[in-house]
Image 1 (cartoon, rainbow, N blue to C red):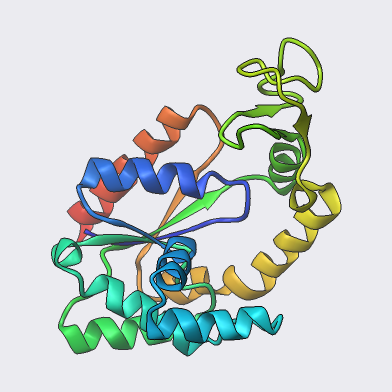
Image 2: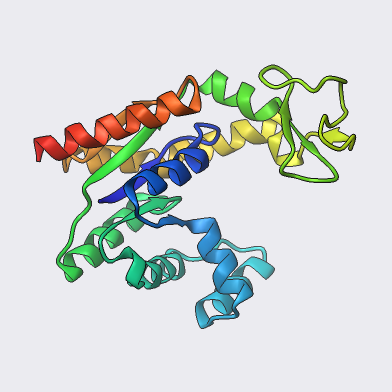
Length: 220
């Protein structure tokens, strides 16, 4: 299957992308991973992207699209992929359509993870990360440490990342509503959108997503 995963910050895209890609046996293609890989490997595209980033500028769509194209042409993506973080706007969605049409393939579905805005803010702003190991993540409401401000695993200090502050989260949500959300209507016009309720236990959300994809496949 060829799938695009969309949803606001805090909806659990990263978690669901990893789980769904494993269940569907397709590669999880994340924009962030693409940038890191190209930059660390010093590819031509990576050097170009880094030049924009070092200058404090956004990486142009054409560079992001070229990276995605290169990744989708790798052998493990021949029979499908799950795109996470791309396309990020309607221009990128149009470019993706053009690219896939050229290759004689098409998307099977666009999974739209939905979560109430205030819940998203609560999820992200309540996160606390261990200074010793960023994989140790707690939450002031959903996963409280035994001792406030102290990591249960290693005893390190728990802190709130700058980009997890409520003000920053609301700015990120505004960017999502302005730039990325319009692609949902774009794909709805193609009959590709499968809306998934992103609230609740992780396993339940994954089950809903897989059921939604099955229905979409049966309808086509």
